[in-house]
Length: 455
Image (cartoon, rainbow, N blue to C red):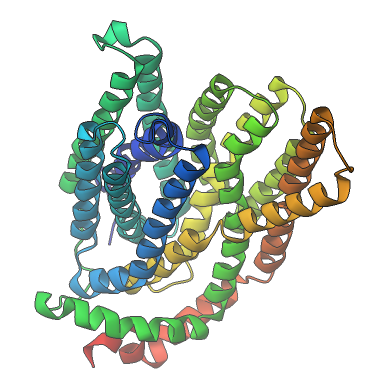
């Protein structure tokens, strides 16, 4: 398929649309509002447990669904339709948060969890559409363009939402709480509204053989059983997935634990919000630049560069003491976060059959959803061990605080192990060998390669 500029921009603008949810809701306001409004007066540990279980349930559900959904979309040639169905479902559930009343934590968690399922489910098919809107020469740039538009779009709306919360009277809102509620509604409208561009501009034609609708689920489940055997035949793709699992686990751990780590070192919530905005607006040009770098220098080398910078960020983060250092870390993360994610996505597209992209990206996204499992567990274990080793008998309040900070520093430093393992596995990925495996995969047994579910 010959990609057009309109199809490329339609695809990239979906990232502009859905990143508002990732930034304003997931990373920004929902965790705070969940504690302070929907769990008002509840023990903080209990509210944290409720949120943790809700996130875990949504994550497990979408991880288990991902390969089957991908196979279903490949069989039916309906990647765009599946993407938009999940996207509008996620936007609807996000809008529902606006009407959830105080202390109705169970309703808030249900709506949020379903919105996360919509967000993550749509991303499976969004990633799988990448081969449909790009070619060999443009795939790195197009993937980077998507992430860069996501950083810009998510950052713009988040900045507006932050202003709404800080100055509610200027937006004719009674207080900051009402501003947060309207922020959720604004995300839903933004997400749904900008979905009109991929709906109108992406043309998914000439790639997939059609299958009867009534058979999609059954055939998708059947095809799922063959996907692992396909990955075993595409050994290079399998090694890349394993490498990706480790280094993206490190990336996701830094993303998810940065706020908690900053708080443990005594930084304020304003510092954290500003650092999040820095990541968004630095990430916009940086993801675009990494896409160009991948085109000219090579995706694999560029991923290595991003991993190396993350190693430096991890060491720097374990030693930092000042607010300026925290902001500097935010800038460094913004420079490489989107680039590593974008080039990983485009590099993987070179190692898999294009007519089964949704199925293979289902597994790719499953690896992503199961990431940030090792990292947080590693951080928790190292932190507890260091705390136990350094804690004196009958400690003073000052000693407790100092040991806690040291344990936090060692725990964040332990994430370096994930980047080292990921980089080591990535060194074993040979793209030329992967191309030969892919050619053999499709040529020797096309029926096994692409028609397993038709048997």
